Every structure is written in structure tokens, then in C-alpha cells.
Amino acid sequence: MAQIMKKKGFFIATGLLVVPVVIFYMLNAGSQNFKKLGYLGERIAPDGIGIKDTIYYSVPDFMGIDQSGDTLHSNDLSNNVFVANFFFASCKDVCPSMNRRLKTVYDRFKEFAEVKFVSFTVDPANDSTQVLFDYSKKFEADPKIWHFVNAGKNGVFDIGQGMLLPVSIEDKTIDHSQQLILIDKSKHIRGVYDSGSDIDIKHLEEDIKVLLYEYHQPGK
Image (cartoon, rainbow, N blue to C red; front, top):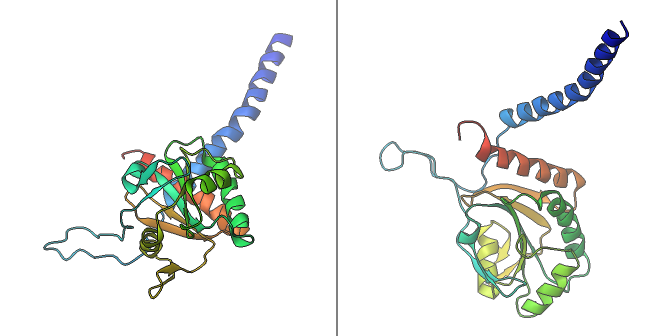
């Protein structure tokens, strides 16, 4: 009798441990199955002749030098989803706060090989490779995962414009922004988030998971 009671106790204890885990995965799988991220930017709809499928807006190719002195080309990110933002190293208010919040997202996803982070300086004249290297150290950024990039004045203007940020055409500058931009493996913009909002940061983290699930759901 005592042996039977022990077995019952074992199965009850095991059930208490297993059931929450199963429920967690069921809930996560359910939410990811029912949610799909949208696409930002103008798109070309199918016309039944030349265009068979909807063509979603994608950001133009870009290139710059990161904090390690290495060239980063958009093609280097073709197997990654990535979060982009714009900053400058001497900024004393918005940028440090924005990048501290971005670091919380980075810390959650830095072990995921498919997720990268790219921060473009809007002050390329002053943010040299050494400046970017020193700045990146403040956020304990692994240069293979979180790139701080100098693309030059014209380059960063084109990148900002390509990522649909407000820009000044006259002097080719990007308006100061605290937005974080989520981009998929096909360079489609899938979300824009206010780095000053706790709710938006949580949405970004959830949307990264949803986007990764798009690439790994059954049947893909």
C-alpha cells in the first residue's frame, strides 16, 4: 500500500511540473499561430499580368564601417532579422536612453544567431571607428551581434530615408529620432517602436519572437 501511495505521489508531483510547461508552449504556439506582423511602406499589388504577388516595400542596400573597422553590407544581414536605430555618440539625452533600452532587447536575444542590431550614427564626421568602439563598450555590445555603423553623411541620409524616417532634403540630414525599426530577412520593415515607451519595448520583444516563428513554423 505504501509503495502504491509513493507511486501516486510521484505521478502527481511530475504532473505539477509538466502541466505548466505544456500549457506555456500551447499558449505561446497559439499566440504565434494567430499573429502575423504587417509590412510598412508602399507596396505594389498583383495586377494579374506582370506582377503575380504583392511586392512589399524593402529598404535599399546599405554599407558602412562598424566599430571594429569592418565593412558591414546589408547583404551580410540576409539571414538575419535586425533592429535598426539612429544615434550619435556625443548625444547627452535621447540617445543614451534609447540605446540603454535597446540593450535590454539585445540582452534577451543576443544568443539567437538570427537576430542582429545595427545602430547608425547621424554624426559621421565626429563618430570615428574608435569613437564608435568606445561607445559600444558602454553597452557591452558584441561587435558580431550589435554593429555601430558609420555610413558617411550621404550614406546615413539614404539609409534613414530608406527606412522611412523624417529627413531634410535640403541639407541631407535625418531628424532626431528615438525610433527602433524591426526589419526582416527580406529587408521589409515589419515594425517601428518608440524606444521611450515601455509598452513599445515589450511589443518589439514579442514581435521579434513572432517574426522568428514565421521562419520556423511547421511547413516553412
